[in-house]
Length: 335
Image (cartoon, rainbow, N blue to C red; front, side):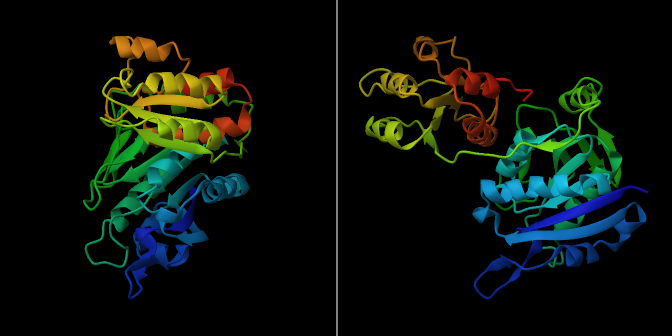
């Protein structure tokens, strides 16, 4: 029987009414008491490492999750992390940056309703996460509303509904229906990122490559945006993620943002260009404005989510000194 560790961090799933709204208060063991039937499929233990609303999640706390996985790695066959939904996409993305050479599943989950509520989605999400962790596919995943999603492609798209997350620009890994895991037959699991990674990991051991730089700014283009914010960014930040229009369009007439981006890059700022659109990513070769932008040596965000790009940029700024190294790391979607 597989040994699974539940790592509790707080979030809605672990919240109770405080008199001033929901607040995390339920520890790991109590969470597990709501799903006693799961103990028939695995040896299950719980560990509470923090109790935070995910609005207050930050890179240091996400690092603590990764450290806990590493510390307990040899004692368990898989890990389930309970987490608030609002920043779950960022945490899952950052875990994919930090946790290297994992041959075991790390499955993050949460809920839109407290596990104490009668009609909660927490019990299903948690049970699905544990069941998938028992199946042994290595990597960082999320389990939510019957879907198993690659951690690098997890995006919250709804604020209240149970189907709050989507897998963006990558197929859903699996669906869980009536306790049965149905893997996506569109994916070649012998050659996909997780399976290929496990082959490359033969002879390697798990490591957590910690470190991050929070001097990162996200800017979203809008008609009429001025240039002053870019002058401010040049002296206050080391990295900027810019959400352009459509395929990555950035204004280059009147308020000439492209010229400001060139100044940022020339001053040593890592500039990532992505799109405000959720699906299909950017292509700087289609329009003239894109061609002008590509000459600025910006980092191409391709079809990666903003959540992943922000966390990869934070990680890269702490581990590489040269812009070319940062660019190579971020643009490599297999990292």
